[in-house]
Image (cartoon, rainbow, N blue to C red):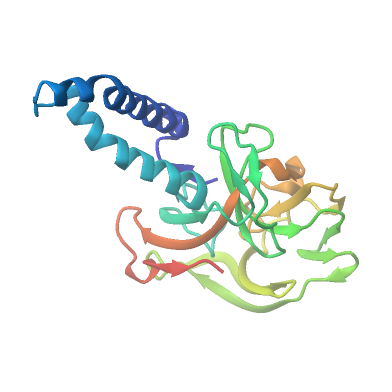
Length: 262
């Protein structure tokens, strides 16, 4: 699951409150106190108003950008290896799956829906205070079957090719037992990771309800995903993961800076 900055402090709520309070103070000053200062030909501002005039524009811009355009996240787990590594800092496009109000998450503008193969951030259905990140495998109405480490969507097998040892980009070492393969989901091709010496994760047939999505990690044998806890409701969607803007986990991996997410 990705961790949004300052999640423990409920950063979206704090940002909304701070923006509202500073904006209200500025508005009160403009309406009631600024005219009196001008009439008295006083140019000095109360220190509180000075601070408000400095902070409100910054808070407002951050609120708009974070709520409706892009939000930064950090990847704390390995469930999306090899696509995303522990320590990747990513940008999530909040506009991709509909514009939503901050804090209450009510959709106010429909701008699109997830496509098969997207890497999506969503609020974990069993605990919406947690943000998870997985790949979209099943769309509303799909029948998803997972057998022998291969997905079949509505009876059509998703093509998996290649079979090479996985080399970690962190230290260029071969990860014991890890096999990298190429998977084609719809029209999107991406790498997945398998540990063929381990028993495959839960197999079965899943019918995706309307208004829900089936999400799976690229680290197929080490991901806690829809195969275990079910489907993601549309209202839990946060946005599409688009870019890795840096990597930091006991060091920088330079070739991961400003890369797109496939």
